[in-house]
Length: 264
Ligand SMILES: *Cc1c(COP(=O)(O)O)cnc(C)c1O
Image 1 (cartoon, rainbow, N blue to C red):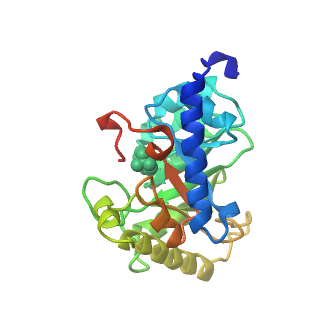
Image 2 (cartoon, helix red, strand yellow):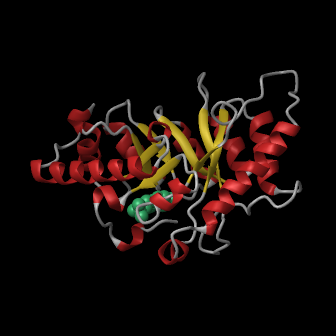
């Protein structure tokens, strides 16, 4: 498999491995339980050979924002990579994503329509982890559903739909990007608090309405707890302090990207 990918140069490889080690030690320094923290290395716009260099350093979780780029990389990189799709999800691309055998999770589900498409597209006996994207900062430039403020919530509706109707999807948690300005100005980011509060609200709702439909066992999260995916290169330490389970780091590992590769 990996023979399809050009070997990274020894210099590039050393550079990536050094950055990866630094990020890992920074995660360890702030996490109460770094073993249960997942580091997703965000490789958008970066060559497959960069991914391979990181893989050789033991990294297995990688994140991508664009469906075609992910399809291309997944095809030629090792099959034991766990791919995370973190970009804005267009329903019509759901089928292409679902066809990637080692797609591990989609962090950016925001509609029942997309959930239905994904659920139908998975034919084999497998379940795909999904996280619901929440727009915690309320910025128009960011996608995601509004945080939960009452029981009458789109996010709750979507979570319910996935849990009760989508046999091939596993509701793993919630994801947010949050406002960067927040992270730069203060050590604490209110958007991260908003996501954990929303997680608690959604979880209480699900627990209170746990009664299954008699057809299958209703489960979510890991050990019944929804995970939160939050924190990027510039703010993952604040996110971990606020309780993040999954951090998504690109620039911090692979270096700067061309401008258009910003978070979306
Ligand atoms: C690009 C991107 C990241 C990684 O951003 P960096 O600042 O490079 O660490 C994380 N999450 C999402 C959703 C992104 O689009």
